[in-house]
Length: 107
Length: 119
Image 1: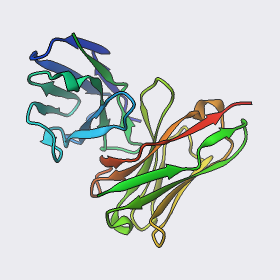
Image 2: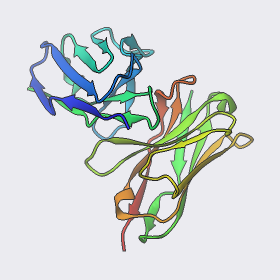
Image 3: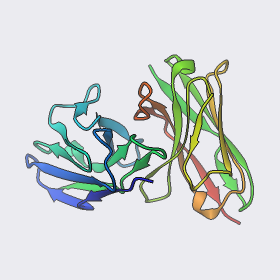
Image 4: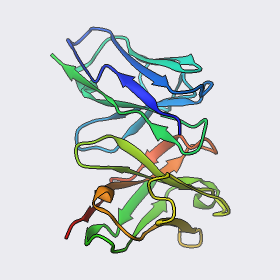
């Protein structure tokens, strides 16, 4: 099973700041990685797929990069509504697995 | 509009069984791979099981293999999860999710149904 490790566990930033979230895989997943956003009390929402492709309707301030074992989700300029937990997920191997999440707090 | 509506959750004793359903609408269900993803209270996401559009192939997390069965009725646009030999650690909100194409990335999610396993 591929283990995805996300860091940091919590990120506290002010509106307008840049957020950088990391996801590291225990073995290569090529570019088969997605990012999701889960706001309090809501179901997750797909943000990024195949490492760097924005899903439909996702604002341009969200971007993804990386390949192999190291991936990054960047929020270029934080908005108050970006308060959420962000998860990475791989589709390279069965079983599909999620990372433990990074909570983004807005100061 | 794509809609996924889960049902069937509830309180069950350890060792018991429960069947979850997910009614789908707004897309061609029979050609869409589907999955169940769960979230224990206050915890992260855990992929549980997946099934191809035809129902010909199924996949499971190690934590539920041999206890859970996934199936679908394409004539009713409904996905199922049969859960047997339930344990306390199966307590979670269970989401039904549509896979994007054949990727098993999940582009649409339901709101979830809560399963509580407790004496």
